[in-house]
Length: 348
Ligand SMILES: NC(=O)C1=CN([C@@H]2O[C@H](COP(=O)(O)OP(=O)(O)OC[C@H]3O[C@@H](n4cnc5c(N)ncnc54)[C@H](OP(=O)(O)O)[C@@H]3O)[C@@H](O)[C@H]2O)C=CC1
Ligand SMILES: Nc1c(N[C@@H]2O[C@H](COP(=O)(O)O)[C@@H](O)[C@H]2O)[nH]c(=O)[nH]c1=O
Image (cartoon, rainbow, N blue to C red; front, side, top):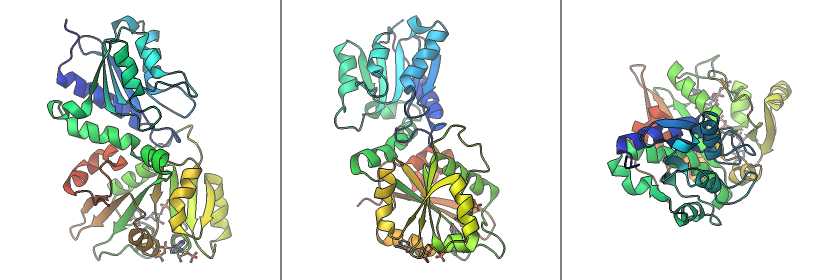
């Protein structure tokens, strides 16, 4: 009855918190997705919660509410959170106070709150009240799957950090190339990758707040750019679609359909797009455009990470991920963990 959990239990609880949080990636903007698990002294998970949507309860509050409904609040000894609990009253009351109203002894935190005004405030408040704070980062090598869990927790808030600290929306480029290294689909088609890769593409659309495309792609493909192959959030905020085009020459019917699905804006300067999207509260955008626009994005180093799906001669595909930062939200997609680990960040 030490109240201390074995690292395996901590790992399982972080897994549960990340899994719950990542269900809501793409629905929480302009807030980051966050997950929380509450455990008893034996390491049994009592409740798991996540932040669902800006203005609704934080992850800790949702987990605490579930515990209360189940009559389990008095059994809470450990809280596991992907992000440092907030210590300020915003649209909702401070999560630190919610935790302090329980017998919680230890709070495990993966990432500090990036907001410079509140950084460290949540952890200090808990410690000032005699609760133990442990950081995943400091003990990551002792925790089974610790590095992956930490990378995923950091991935959950990476776009939020870019947005809140730098005023820019995170740009992920997705590029499919055929066996000749070209992006051009066969005649009459708009895609040529496997079902598995298309599923991933649609999960990426689901997770992002905006899509960036370009005039050439619109005229060639009349792309839908909507989420189809996977379930979309029932209650998500309207996504934005940026059409990079100087001429605004796109078919009228295509635009009418796009405007039913998205808030559509045109941009004649790709350079301005990360800032314009950020001003609209978009945390993470997916670029789906042809070689001309991708060339501009690469030359100007406007991308944050770059997913390449290359069709091989044997019909299989290689996924590769280039990234310019330590953390990447692509870490949240399990099939990309290998490709992410394989390539070192291209820091600038
Ligand atoms: N394999 C894949 O992953 C993908 C493949 N594709 C394929 O790519 C092909 C189309 O590619 P491509 O012809 O290169 O066209 P793009 O999709 O790259 O669009 C080029 C257009 O973007 C606009 N543009 C270019 N530079 C800028 C800038 N700096 N700021 C703002 N707007 C700019 C211009 O639009 P405008 O002329 O309107 O002024 C330009 O004509 C199609 O065959 C399509 O199927 C498309 C997406 C993904
Ligand atoms: N060719 C290609 C992709 N291309 C992107 O998908 C768009 C078509 O979207 P939609 O009309 O919604 O199906 C196309 O215009 C381009 O932006 N994506 C991929 O995952 N794999 C592929 O092989």
